[in-house]
Length: 126
Image (tube, rainbow, N blue to C red; front, side, top):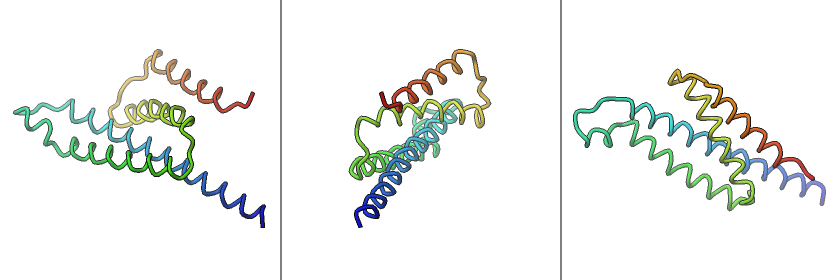
């Protein structure tokens, strides 16, 4: 009974980690949508904020806030939050390359590698 119970809770924890990572990915999509809307020309200042990409992006940000809170309440320790959140830079880099056709400079690649190394170092048990 104890082993099954432990296995069950490990699976539940994995769900919350995946949910938190998914919320970070959704926030990355919202950032890409905001970048797309920032590159457009508008007739008035009001149109910049009423544009459907902007409204949809803020809705996604609100959703990701609730998903993050739900993940923390589910048991994801706060010490993992900066590590999982730092993956957002990697998601934005990849999505920017795919959807915005941004160029990958050496500095962007170097910064992404530093983020990945930081994530790996944090995950190592010393």
